Image (cartoon, rainbow, N blue to C red; front, side):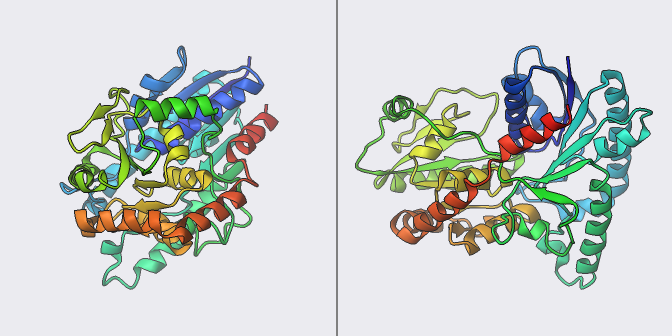
Length: 396
């Protein structure tokens, strides 16, 4: 039986959820043995939501630093770089040993460079497919301020990363091609035309029977006379507190006008909804998230790439609150707003008042919904999950 080795970036849940969905789709086409290499949140998610009997190995964790207020810590990045480099080298060694022992037919990496480099050390190199939504390292705005050479560094780092990513047999950009690329800021400034293949978003299927949707409506006692606002709170736990506080503080006013459902994004939390005194429904972990994307009139969320793709594939406008000082999320939210799909609120500017005003604007201004539906029709020409599965199959 064929073997596939999946190496997954551990921070957040966007990478691991799409890898798990791709692996299941590939298995539907032809059975195989899978092994997942991951750490941090991805490891927890796989243990809770992976298929029974799947092989999981825990690799050395490598993530950025976060401040007490939940923002990306640029001040800690440079001092910690030698330690991060040492951890990265341990990752390369770890992946080389595990890939060699497992002897897979193919390696699939989601946003991890270590497995790409590790295969170069093997006597028999398996083909490797790399999925990306961030091609280069983008410096946070706070780090760029007053540093004119930062753009030169970004370009140089991007060129070096491009050379390293290109060691893969395939580099798949899980995004729409220009001019609709949501991760535009994480690609621009580098010539990627000969390296990457745009495959579209890797989003879950949003085709549900009317019975499934009615069950969700009944579970949450949704008032058909009111619009539905779905708050999806995601990301590393340390980044969530202030976002959660503002959302909960806004619920009493928002519930007067809308149905409100909140998912806290705790992958090991309860899947049962709890009714708050404000009238909102709260999930620790929402098992009907995809149904709510279909039923909702607006999504309020972080601006992770996975979430952006789901909003577009569902044709829903959104209010986006990127993690403070997080360059990828800031770029995603800016492009989403530029395309007229929703409203961006910087985390440092988030208040109850502007959150409520932004929700009202996205629901009541029809241009946001029309733009979202237009881009949804463009995105439907691609089927990222099916495309990635086909590419994996072609190497088997």
